[in-house]
Amino acid sequence: NTVIALISEFAPAFENNTTAYINSVIKSIGSDLIGELTQEKMIALCKAIVLVENGSGYTKYIDNKDYQDAIDILGIPLKKKVIQ
Image (cartoon, rainbow, N blue to C red; front, side, top):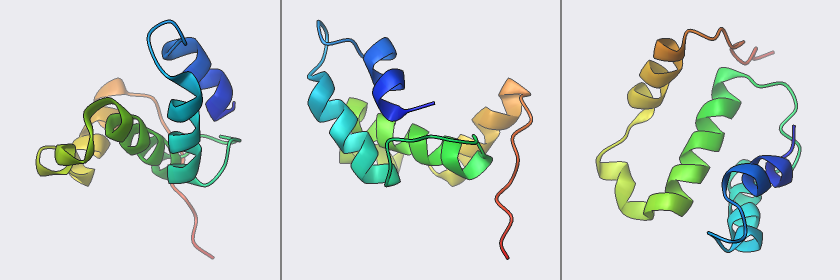
């Protein structure tokens, strides 16, 4: 449930500069703690990871609808952020 745990498992140090990767994702989403995984948080995490993996040029190819479509394809219900 943290960025450190997620990145350490799926982007191990023998393949990546894990510290830089973790710091980049934390900076992008604003926290190490993932907490409750909402659609918005999942998309933010995915965007941060794609940025590290592919660089800033990815924005030409992946938009918010693509991320939402990927979540829909997974079929895992995620709560939508409630705006109060």
